Amino acid sequence: MKVVIEQWHAVAAWQWDMPEDDMCGICRNPYDSTCSKCKFPGDDCPLLMGECNHSFHMHCIYAWLQQDSSQDKCPMCRQAFKPKDAASTELE
Amino acid sequence: MLVAKRLQKELVKLNEHTPPGITIVSTENFQEWLMDIEVLDGNPLYQGEKYRLKFVFSGSYPIEPPEVTFVKDATHPIPMHPHIYSNGIICLDLLDRQGWSPVHNVESVCMSLQSMLTGNTKNERPPGDDDFVRRNTQRPRDISFLFHDNSV
Image (cartoon, rainbow over all chains, first blue to last red):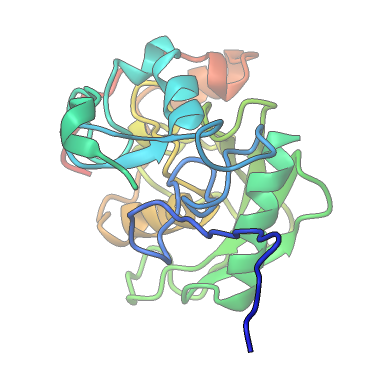
């Protein structure tokens, strides 16, 4: 018996390459979810990792760094927060 | 809105597990919570007492710190401590803009205050307490504290 495929519909699942039960320390939502303002996870609400290896939703860490009182420090370790080079943080 | 989402998560977690000596008193809205703390290590200054904390959240929590003060009523005194004024205002860098971090939360603030009391041996108020309590009309968030004592 021959089957002819006339149409197919691919479905894929994705997640950030991060520990599964981990969450953003600022909004306390999982990394695979969004910051508190966004509706759609993924490229619209990406993660940002610092050179200190602490990660947050980009929108969350920007909201913090915009405050003068943050003194541009990582909320976790209080070292200067500098985004890690994009090439070295390839998130899948 | 953002505040509510974050506090809702904190509340779920606190309802699942509250650390020893910490009790939720009221969390009816996402602007003001009351929490009770006890010092459990037998420090004679605080033995057998419960202290009531009031958390007031701005619309920018957790980017901005909550305003946290001790509240006095018939059954809840203000703990004696060289960094706690007799009107309940607390001088702690963690609660000030300069020392706050958005990864802190209600639970971690309660635990920090517990440990601040645990480590204290001085049965005294901050210098100038009478004067400060009589004259201060500012909200805690608007006071510029000078954090000069790193020993407590």
